[in-house]
Image 1 (spheres, rainbow, N blue to C red):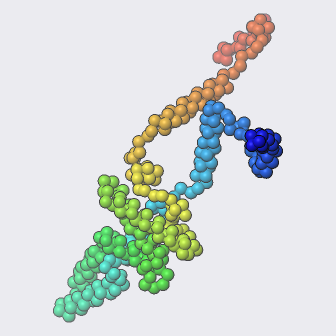
Image 2: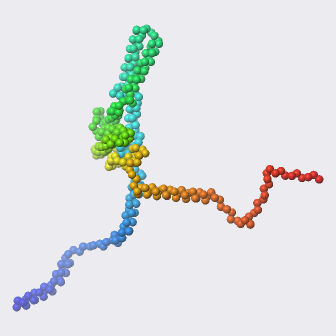
Image 3: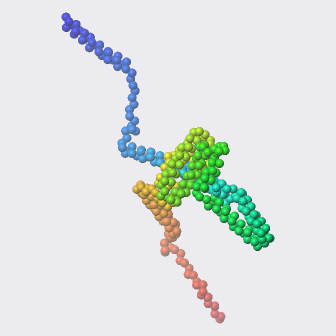
Length: 335
C-alpha cells in the first residue's frame, strides 16, 4: 500500500516539474547582451596601422600647438626684458656710486676741499695765477680718481647685487618696507638667477652654481604658483614684468643638458648626443633636399635649351650669302 502511494507521488511530481521550471524561468528577468563589434575583431596588422595613424595625429597636434606657443626661457625669461635692462642701466650709470654714497654730496665735499686749498694758497703766496691753475688741475684730477673709485662700475659683484636687489624690491613692493610679499621674493630670486647665470656661462664646470640656479628657479615657480592662488591679477602682472609665462611657472623644470642645448647656454657646445633615429631623419632630409635640387637643376637646363626646328633639311629655305662688310664694291668701267 505504501509502495503504491510513493509511486503515485513520484508520478505527480514528474508531471509538475515542467510547469515549475517554466514559471521559474519566466520569473527571472532577462538581460540584454551585445555582440562584439566587427571593428574590434581586426587583425594585428590593422591594429598596428591604426596605432601609427593615431600617433601621427597626436604628433601633428603637438607640433601645431607648439608652433603657436611662445618659446620662453624658463630661467631667464624673455630676452631684452625691460625690468632687467632698467636695473642694468642703473648699475652702469656713471653717477651711481657704491656704498650708498650720493653723487651730489661727494661733489659738494670735493668742491669744498678745492676752495679751502685755493684760499690757503691765496693767503700764503698771494694771488698767483700760475699756482692757482696748478691747484685747480690737481683738484680736478683728484675728483676724477675719487669718482672712479666710488663708481658702481668698479665695485665688487656683491655690491652690485645688493644695489640690484634694492632696486627690485623698490619696484615690486606693495608698501614701503615690504620685503616678504610673493612678488618681491620672486623679483629678488630673478636678480640672483641672472647673476648666477652670468657666472655659469663663463664657468661651465661650476656645478655648485648650476645647482643653485636649479633650486632658485624651482623655488620661484613654487612662490609664483602660490601667488596665483592668492591673487591672480597680481600674479599675471608679476610674471609679465619678470618676462615669464604661465607655462614656465607650471612646467616641470630641470637644468639639464637638454635645456642647455635648447636655449644655447653655452653656444657651440652640444650637450645631448644625437640618437640613431635623429641621425636617420637628418639623412633622409639631406637626401630629399639633394633630390629636389637635382630636379630643379634639370628643369632649368631643359628650359635653357631651345627646341630645334621640325622641318626637314631639304625643305628648309636656303640662306642668302652675306656680303662681307669690309669688301668694297668695284666701280663700273667707263665706255
